[in-house]
Structure formats: C-alpha cells, structure tokens
Image (cartoon, rainbow, N blue to C red):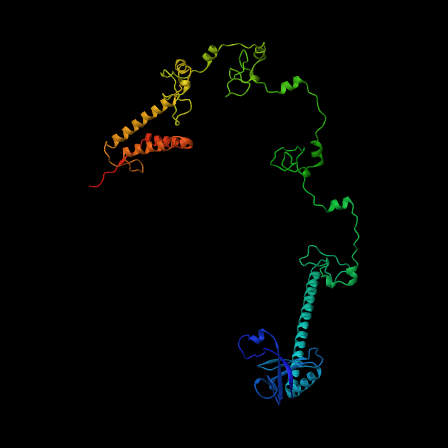
Length: 465
C-alpha cells in the first residue's frame, strides 16, 4: 500500500540529545510505501530519495478510526512516527494495513497488557487484605486488653457494661469505666448514656471536696508585710485555713471612738526642749528651713522661746557704709595704683594689666580710671604723617636686617631687597590712590603693613660663589 501522509518532525530515538525537529514541531507531507514488514517514506512520489524507514517487526500501531484530526502513531524500538491522513477513508485504510502487517506483534502486545492489568489487580487486592487484616488485629488486641483489665477489676467483670461511661483516669483514651474499650460495647450501651445534668445539693458537693486541716490560730489578723500574699494572717496561714471562731474573734468594729486631746497627748512621744531663750531663724542656706540660730529646729523650742519672737517686726535702715562693713572683706588689696583693663584675650574679662581682677583693687586705684574719656580728632594730614613715619621705621628695620646691602632675602616666600619692597609699596599706592580703587588700595596697603609688623624669621639667601 502507498499514499500521501503528513508526518510530524522528530521522533528519532537513536539520536543523542534533542534534535531541531523535536524542538520546533512541524508537519511534512511525505509519500509512504508499505512493503511487507517495512514502512518507508519519501519526499516525492516514487522510490527515489528515501527519507526514512520503520521496521514493523516490533512496532505497535496506536490510533482510532474515529479520530477527529485523522492522526495515529507507529511506535518502534528506535522510532516514533506521528502520522496524519488526509481524510477518514485514508485513515481507515492505513490503520487496517499497518495492523495487518504487524498483527502477530499486536496480539502479543495486547496479551502483555492484559497480563499486566491482572497482576496490578492482584497486587491491589493483596494490599487491601493486609490493611483489613491489620484493622482486625488491632481490634482483637484492644478487645483482649479490655478483657484483661475487666478481669482484674474488683469485682471481676465478665463482659462490657450496658452503659458506656468514659474513664478519665484510664491510660488509654476511650476506655469505659468497666475496663472495656468503646468498640466492645453494644449500640444500646453507647446510646443509653443520659446527657441530662443531675442536680446535687451542697451537702453532696461538700462531701466530695477535699477537706483541709484548719490552722490553730485563735484570732485572724491581717499581716501588712508586702512580701506576703494579700490576706495572710500574722501566723503565716491564709484566711481560708482559719476556723469560723478565729474569723469571728478577729472581727474589728468599724465604729469610730472619740478620743480627747488629753488622751492623744498622753500617747504622744514627748521630746526634751532646748534651753534657747528666743527663737531666731537662721539664714544659713546649709541648714534646714526653720532652724534657729542655736542650731535646734523650731519644734524643739519652748512656748516662751517662740513667743519671744512674736513682737512687731520693723525694718532697720542701714547705710551703705554699714552694709559694706558687714560684708565679707577679701584679702589684702593689691598695691596697684591705677586699674587698667588688660586686652589680653587669654585673661578673664575685667583683669587689670597687673594681673589681678577688678574686685581686688582699692577704691583709689579704681577712681584713678574714673576720669573723663575724650576722643582726639586727627586730620588726614596727621594720619598720613604718622603712616609715613611708621613706614620709614619699618624700612629702616628691614634694611638693618638685610645688612644695608642689595642682598636678596626672603620674607616668608618672597625674594626681594628692601629697595624693591619699598618701590612695590609706593607703586601700589600711586596706582590706586583715588577713584573707585581707593578702598582697595588702602586695604592692600594695610595688609602689607600688618605683614611687615608681624615678627617673622628672615631667611637670608647668599648667592653661591
């Protein structure tokens, strides 16, 4: 038999690793030829250019004539062909021919599948029997344990009781009071348990309660120790462990008893009074408030001492001389004749040039500075004359340090002679003497003056010979 079929790419089991056709699935139209036990396919109709072949000796055909897309499988040990016919008639013809070509193998495969199903059914049946046997063994063991426990009860119980009641003290959960498990009781015994609550009197409940031994204390008194539980008696036992007589004996009357002042004073602790004749409050801040000049508190003074201080209070006016005389005088005043404030920032504010504070100077030394302060107004001519004099003094000092020779010397990082320095200063002043650059010229000149006034180490550079 021969004809056109569509084959899905891939399906070669002999190749190692995934092929391109197995990754990208697509259908290819091929010409198939069934010759005996071999199924071959070609790219074109005829017997030229064979693309592949499948031996049907050990192959299995899987498919159904009712398939909607007319597809079926041909599975061999080394190849799987996924094929699709063009119509239902072609599908029926190909399935019949292929099954007839490998009919012996088909019957053998069906027989193998049937045997496998029978073996699986037998294994499942054996497993179910084992589970059932385990359940039966467990029930038997539990019944034997229940019967053994029932035989050891007093009096011995031959069988389960007629009313199942759970024993809460039993080692095995679900054991009845008779010793048998729940499974050993009849349905009537399991349903016969009444769920109604039985009303019991207080006498019956008290009879079942555990009676505690009462304490021998005759009177209950609460202990106020905070380390003990609340309601503990002075004897150390709680209130619940005391007898009714002890509780009644410790009952305290809530009525208030009116006590006179004489009785209260008699109960008070009397302190010995001090012999101070008049109470005067001490203003020493180191003593407690209300302390007398004698050192004793106000409560330790007699009524006479307290009444001596009850006279009218009048303010005494004192002069500044009296007040100064009562003040604490510092040590001997310093011998500085005139107080002058030192401008040294390392000293405390208000320190004199002599090194002592203002408070340690005499009144004469302080008054020597009390003269009128007046500002001296100077003209610009006087200021320029003073500046020229200062500049000349600085230049003389520089020339002296430069040994009055045109030897190059260094001021910080410069290498200029005294004549060059003076020429640079005058050139800067002349270039910026007026107009909008006057302020900049004065600022630059002042900076140069400050640098010249600052004491620095001069590094003299002597030319190499």
